[in-house]
Length: 401
Image (tube, helix red, strand yellow):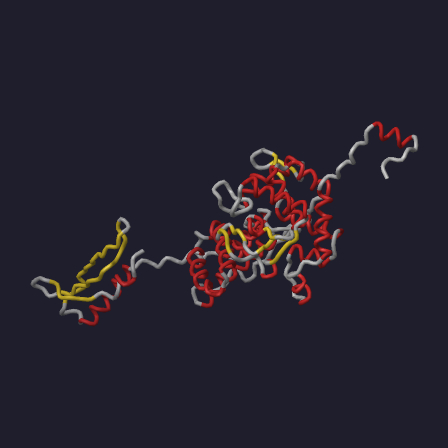
C-alpha cells in the first residue's frame, strides 16, 4: 500500500524555458518487488502570468489528491487483530489463548478476508449458523457471537465503522448438551478392552474423575504416601506443563483405593519412571487430542460404545473425556454423599463449607472411592473346593474348627 506521507500536498516551481510556467511537483510512495519506492510526478499547470502562486498551489494540491488511491477498507481480520491487541491487557493468559483460538479456528477462516464495511447482519448470522451446524458445543457458538459483537462494538466506538452489524445477530437453536455416561457394563467392557497402561489411565479417569489436563500432568512424586494423588499441575495443549490447574478449587488431593495405588507403584517400578507417570514417546506430556483420537476412541470401538461410521468410512466412537468424567459423577452417587462427589471432582462452589471440605479427605470419601473401584472390576469367583471336601460336607463331617 502507498504511504500517505508520499502524497502530501505537492508544491509548485517555475519550469525551465523561455516562457515562465508553473510546474506542479508531488511524490508517491509505492511498493515495487516488496520494497518501498518513491516516484516523482510533475505537470505544467499554466503560465505564471495567468496564475498566481496561490492558485497554482491549489491546483497542485488537487493533482496530488487525485493521485492518491482510495484507502483500503479494513477487513474483519484487521479489526480482529486490533481488537485483540486492545483487549490483551484485560484478559488472563488462559482466557486470552482461548479467545485467540476462537478467532484463529472459527471466525477468521469465515470472515477474515471480508471488508468490515461490507459485512452485514445476514453475513454474521450465516456465519454463526454455520459454526452451530458443525456440531460444536453451544457455549463455543455463544463465545463466537460474543467476540464478533465485541470487534464491531469497539470499532464503532472508535469511529472505524458507522454501525454494528452484529448487534441484532442471535444464536440459532443449538443442540442439547450431551448427558451421556457409561453404564457399569460398558465401563467393564472398556476396561477389558484396554491394555496395561490404558487400563491404569482409564481407572484413574473413572475412579478419580480426573480431567485429561490433570492426569497427563501427573508425576511420580504426585503419588503420596497413604494413598493420595496430588493435583497441582496441568498439561495444556497450548502451553505445555504449567504450575496451575483449571480453577483454584481444582488444586488438591484425591484419594486412591489401595488396589489402584499398588498397581501404579508396580507400574512405576517396572517402567523405571522418574518424572511423568504416563509420558509420551518423547518423554513429554501426552497430547489430549492425540490420546482421544488414537487411543480412547479406538478402545470405544473395540468395546462397542457409541460406534458410528466416520467420514473416512471407518468405524469411530463418540466416547470422550467428558463422558468418562460424567460417568464418575453419576455412579459415585451410590458410593458416597453429594459432597463427596463434589470433592472428588473438585468442582468450584461458592459455599464456604464446600470450599473447606474440598481441601480435606473425609473417611466416607476414601471408603466410597474404594467401593466404586471394586464395582468396576469384575467380581472374582470363589475358589473351587476339592472333591474330598465336598464329600465330607455332604456327610456332615466338620471341616476345620
